[in-house]
Length: 161
Image 1 (cartoon, rainbow, N blue to C red):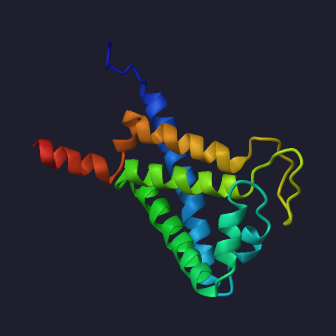
Image 2: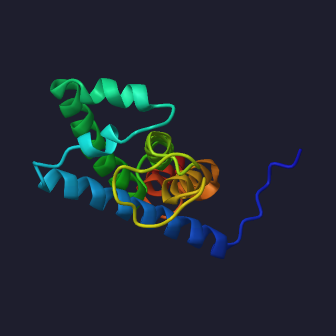
């Protein structure tokens, strides 16, 4: 099996650009939630209708659990976003981001027969931005570009020198 990768500089550049853009999106979402102390995931979770609806009901049934989930969500978005933008612990940030976005998807999947209880920014069927961003983060996590053009690459150079 050939383990050599033939990725061009353009491909690396676009993967790093995707990493940065998704990182910006997640960081901004986290900062927005942090700066709005009245923000809560209650409205989002309360409308969950699919496989994680029971989990959503459990979270929203306790203000203490909901508060913990809100804090984890806010700080998780900030940490993942910063990791992706700075290229620091990039693989871990990309995997954590893919999992978080996958959870968002599972709480609110765009499937036939499910009606969103909150306004949505578009009309989706099966595929939405959460699924696309999760797939892109999975790609970034497994690509060699995960360690390029960021603090991870600087640390890797110091270790090898």
